[in-house]
Image (cartoon, rainbow, N blue to C red; front, side, top):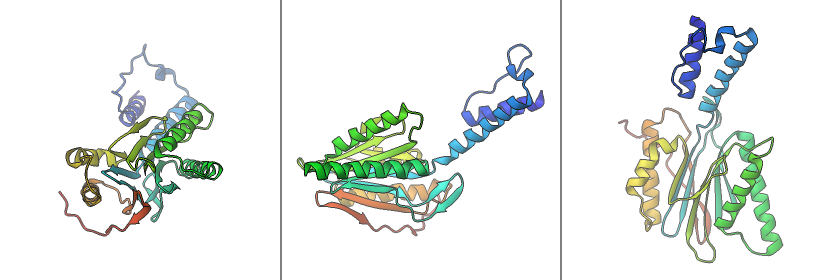
Length: 257
């Protein structure tokens, strides 16, 4: 009985659910077999892996005439760093950029699939898809895969400048095919530390310099409080002139709180 209580409490701690009181009548664990205990043990391991798998950091900031997308450089699996210089972004056309996080195989395959289809549309029609059109195409593909036997586990930030109106657009997309246009967005652990900073300091008419300064506030907070080494940030900016990478000081030492 004590072993069953400990196992139930471990599942409750990982899922955030309250502890389950075991009684002789109500609990089916009183009659569990070795095979059912193995299933529960695998469930515990799965919940632990899913809890620690998404340690990437994605940040997006839209301003007056630009969109900033920043992604952590570390490719991680649980607590293990597999690669320290990973590029989690893909340029879809001249004015549209996508950043992704999630399961490593799903992210690269899905990002290259979207990149290839955006390029194919441009070649066939001699025009670029707008950021809103790309975002709705991405959402449709995620919704289709979600209803298949092999859904993609991918979270995305998609930003760009509309080539006609020259207005910036930033879209937040998650693995459940939810799509939301936002002035700023985050995925991964960044949303726990940075959304309050963005909510306080962001305004729609901020310039590129103000946007980069706001991004620095967010990355400093991550260095100060995030208990993992995400190997710094890769920062790219989308303007009416196209996509360019911005050099940032990832070796900057931030004083602890």
